[in-house]
Amino acid sequence: MLLACAGKMVACPAGCYCDAPDMKVSCTGADITEIPKNIPADTRFLDIGSTSITTIRKGDFHNLHNLRGVLYTVVPLPRYSGPLQSDSSSLMTSPRFPDMT
Image (cartoon, rainbow, N blue to C red; front, top):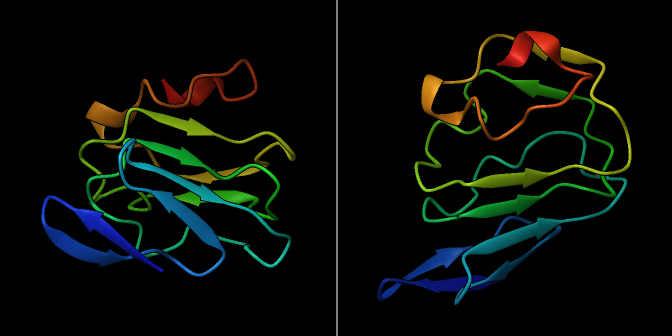
């Protein structure tokens, strides 16, 4: 799928739906086991609920400078491998992740 983004066409990751006007990306499906690598850079909101993602790795959001929110709903993330970049630490705060803030 292609997403029109500031006059450019950007590919939407497989298994994801990209909503261009709101800059939302929703990824669903048990076959998604990690954060997709080619999320459009202008994405503001990322929904990774209903996936099989169990780990968020350092650098997973490195090119998502406009990211304001991440929704994960199905499984708790049992592992986290490194600090989020300082400007993203407010995206994911939860009592389950005391070391992430």
